[in-house]
Length: 225
Image (cartoon, rainbow, N blue to C red; front, side, top):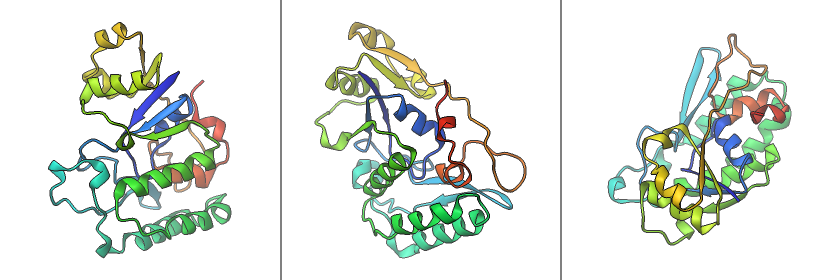
């Protein structure tokens, strides 16, 4: 069994999906603390002026005592229409715009109260679009009280994992000895970003999935071989 774990992300980048595609189970880590200025509630698209952030506004009141699953979206800022307008203006000349944009309009119709719920439902949409069938489990629906490396190991043991795919940052906090003792091998993602047709001049990597999705249907480029 191959497991990977990641915090929710808004309009994630390609490497996020590559880890999921290579796994049997992906754990959507919405039971940890929200990290300000992370990719949990924002990501970048490409505009004629270069890359630009799309950010879901959230209520920061009490966030240091709350888990991600409890973080509420600030509904007073009209962010959904702003994001759609930005995507429309930036990608109306993209090869797949006519096919893809109406799907985004439908996706953005739902008015979510909680950020994690938005990211979860959007994730299921993107997985379906990319043809990824990995099982997805929300950590908030599991009963773990541990944190950091121990939490990751507990989740791996819950699903009888024999391989855990970690991001590069895992090197800084995973207790590899404990994983070895539990017969769980760790592999660290070393994602080589593909180059694909892109609007607006020189290629920019590490953008939101929206950029890749609007510009190409070569989903085989997603996964490093």
